Length: 315
Length: 290
Image 1: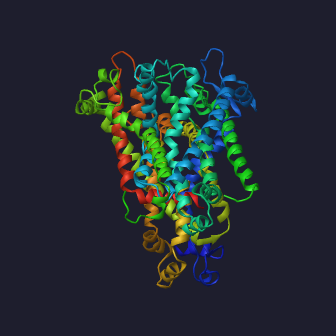
Image 2: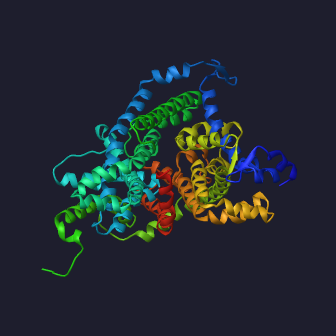
């Protein structure tokens, strides 16, 4: 740490809780301490966002014969128009929206229910159940997706085989079943994670509150519904926001399911579609699709935050 | 009938207690059965996978399968595991140190732009990762970083969530008096961080390292975009590549190999989670009670 740097930082920075005294004696190398994070952060988080927006405004112009190198020309918002005009891409947005609308509330309801049951005083084998529910999260997402893709694959699936014994003809990879199958993969993988966040919040509630309510004749269900659930609201908001963002980035599950369900299109989800555009060397289209999806994810997650904040009780 | 004194709760509602247990048991079957299927299937021959009860053992071929996994494609599975370890350990170690320093600075120094910095870090936690992967790929291909170790390592070294955790922890657990005492003893600011703050923050460091390690080990989209060379790929990308080579032909990878390879790749994470439970739980708590 050179004195020059200390000098330069002096005056601009004041240590917490020691305003004034430390300030005159020496500077605080704040800039130096933040640089190792902020420089890569700017290069690998902020720059890609800027670069995407920039790329989304251009397109490659190829000459008719393709003998000369393609040139980049300004395209305005035409990539956006193309993306939004593309029925496949619109379909992928809608699909993810629908999966999220059904799967996220269902998953969080199950997570909340399991957390409340685990939190109940008389519940047995808490440690075992907690670990059992959490295990799917400890498996890499890709491994979970491969596993489920085989669990639903025609010819390999023990579920289909069992249904067949019962005289049911079930194809979990048929077009109608793709969305429920993917929803199930997400629910299986993430319920335990969300349950643990809610459970941790439940455990922070003072025991006296429940005891007092019991004295007043409140049933266990009443305590859960009237006291515990309102108190873990911040955890529920957090898990909802994380789930919305998670649904927006849906990629692994459909991409891996595609290996056993060839009818699953490569524009099943927006990320999948963008990745497909990259593979087709259409970077500009991929950029426009990424920006649209980012905006949608942003609007939905922040919209949700604002909605619950307005109803009282901030995150 | 047992007449020995029991806690009030157990005597009053035995029926609801069994009901709760039943619900929890059904839920644990749902969460555990697929993992059980994976374990059982990794012990089967390829032919046995298609016949008999999927949830019960047939001819025990686990060792043959493991042997085949490590022999497939010239033993590339070793390379994939080593690559995953390199990305996860290297990326997590660097990102943890950087995040600790940044989080400590954000918690313990007052300066102009502090809130702005912290808010942009928070916003970055909410940016869907795959949305960064595509533009990063575009950028990296411009500067010829695609298909190198750096293409995956560099993005792994930044963890906004780590900075967030580090700031919360440093704010709550590093006393100002300790920093002031270090200053009176004449220690430089960095020395105070390295010798005093880092030690106090060590549980948070383990948590950040763990979360980042898991995030990198399980990441799929970024490496699959960045790495076409399969000798650079992590195990997640490698296995999915094998799974995609289904069907017939000389390069087809049988199902039992994919299943056993997937099972093996899950072991490091499960072991890590089980052995370091208290750290990831504290991370989840910090994440939920901000």
